[in-house]
Amino acid sequence: MSNKLRRFEVLLPTQFNDGRDIPEESIADAIDEIIGQFGTVSFQRAAVEGYWQHGGKLYRDTHGLIVVDVPDTAKNRKWMKAFKARWKERLEQLEIWMVSHVIDIE
Image 1 (cartoon, rainbow, N blue to C red):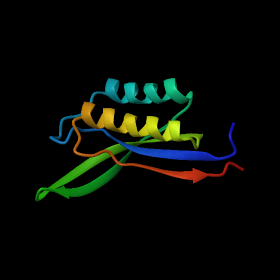
Image 2: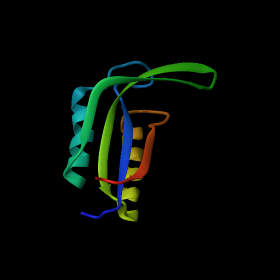
Image 3: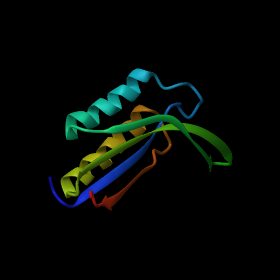
C-alpha cells in the first residue's frame, strides 16, 4: 500500500430532496460500488443532519457517512468524482457533499 493515502468522506443522503426515503437497496448499491472498486469502505449509518438553502427554500437532510481510504492517485480521485456525479443523479440530488484530504496511517 502506498504511504500517501487520501480519505474520501461522502455524505450519502437517506432522502430524496422532495422528502421521500431513499430505498435501503440504493444505499447498499452505493456501498457495494465502492467495495467493488477499492475493496474496502466504512459506512456510518447514524444520521448526520444537514441544513441548507437553495432558491429561497430551506432543506433539511439526513445522511449516512461513507469513508474510504485509498492510495492518493489521480485515477482514484477521478473515480470518486465520477461516483459522486453518478449518485447525485441517481438519488435526484441538487448536490452531494464529498470532501477528501491526505492522511497518514500510523
